[in-house]
Length: 130
Image 1 (cartoon, rainbow, N blue to C red):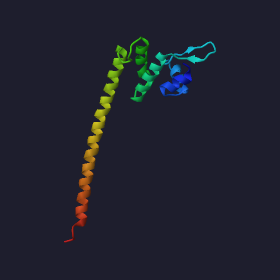
Image 2: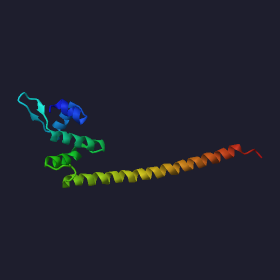
Image 3: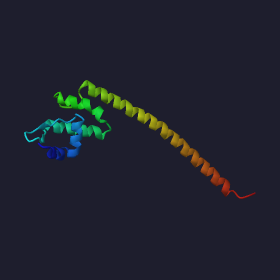
Image 4: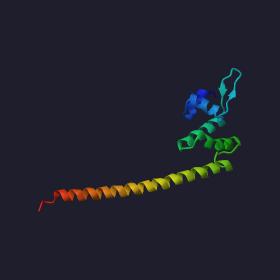
């Protein structure tokens, strides 16, 4: 298939595919007239790239998954280098969640203080002078 068909089937653009090619992630063959020609394996690679990008992986993180697919595996996440990336990414997400938990607790505490202060202020302004 040519680049336009691959782009359509993968749900991306020809420009994006050319970018993946410059990054060494997608490997077209060249026809006699110089057109890029892709096989079904490249479609699978592009799907893998797009699904990993969608969940926050960078292109460097994706390389082991592509290499795993190119090694003939049905999935890009079964090779040791891919598993290492998954572990690292999961640790990053866990760290983000921990930090978000701290931020959430601080915001909750600040909101509770603000509400208490507002209620106290409202009570003082409503009391009749005596």
